[in-house]
Image (cartoon, rainbow, N blue to C red; front, side):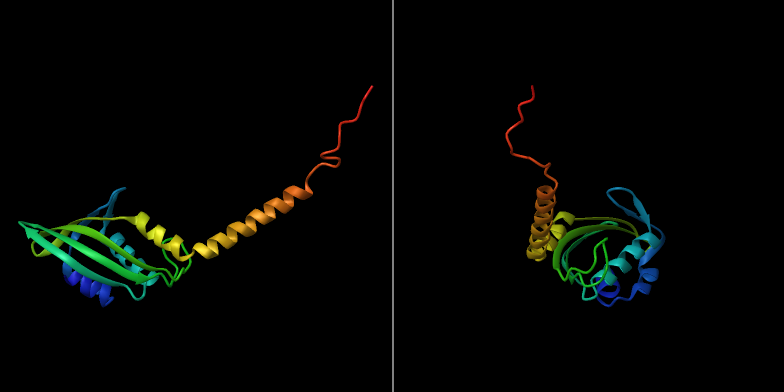
Amino acid sequence: MRVFDEIFNQKRLAAADELYARDFVNHGLHGNATLQEDQAAARAEITAFPDLRMTVDLMVAEGDLVAVMWTFRGTHSAFGYGLPPTGTRLVLRGMTIWRIRDGRISDEWTTFNSFSAYIQVVRHLKWFLLGVLALLGGLVWLLAGHRRPRGFGAPPRNVS
């Protein structure tokens, strides 16, 4: 609970020193991340979503493992994830499994539907995106119209 409450909701990133093992590994889909890389990602989320709120919907523990189903809510109001601020209010649900060793988090596996985040951004920006597409389509149409060779559409000359 402290990870979500202190690090994300209170933006007290220093709490990571108390909560995570020094040799912590975040086992990502495309590679592992160290504690420093993991916390840099947390800082990036907090920066991109200054009003970020994480809620714990369900938590189950067995042995040295803790599974958490969580909900992420925040407004994309600063540069982040390769995008300028979009103003999109995101709501994501995900799951994290932690391994606890000597009272600290030593391993993490997290999953969420990142495609859902992109869909929410596109829905939020749909009229803007449609306007841009219409403008680009109009420009292509105009440019194509001015590049027609002279005599286009005229009957072929009879060359003897």
